[in-house]
Length: 313
Image 1 (cartoon, rainbow, N blue to C red):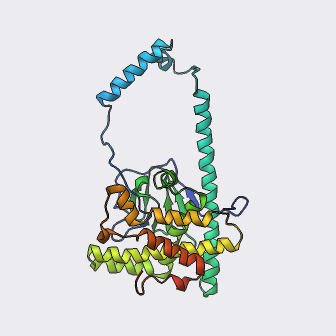
Image 2 (image 1 turned 60 degrees about the horizontal axis):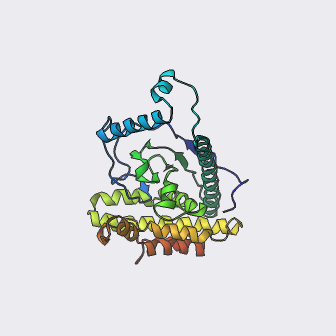
């Protein structure tokens, strides 16, 4: 995607490094919570202190350095000094490069958000309405939203309570490496999908869904959730269409977005995580559905083509 030199949105709140207290509030993914990109999570070790294995490892490291003529206790005790070691300079450079890469990703996210603002301002204006822009919150590790506490493991999400998109940029590493969906337009698709939920919030789709699902069974709520999510995919496709009309798409961009939609389909995720699928537990749509509805938005560029609530999806 050709994005450098274009306008960046001022609606970006950078909360990286601030964190949030653990386990505050309710989860943002309950019956009145946020709407997120699905993301498998693994178990993590809880508790403090060091294990016996860790202690043994540190002892071994101490003697290895001792054999190299480096007394780690002396180095730590002096509280300073420099130890020249092969590869240290490269590690330091890699750290600076990672930081620079994060800042470039932040600039890209701000640019994509600005492009969604332009798209939806135009669409709303054509209907005689005013588009209220959402905020995007960049966080690291954990964050507190109006929908509750969330960690990076939850994946990107939109909270209708404060009209903000929440994003830990480490998700994009997961998207590329774990879900095999690399590319800048795959990342842009994620942002455009969450902004699609914001559009649903403004048009009343999310408030109605949140009200109705309180009286639904889990299976019924999942089926309705699929329709909500697929419409957000279709809205992301509309943004993609307007971006193409501006001449910003590069060769392979559309395929990146379609691949991302495929890789985070419920069936594909369940096969990857547990080896089998449970259709009644789907709440975002299959890979085929997500790909098809994004493509429909992209092909038509029309909001009325994104009616996922009438007929089959």
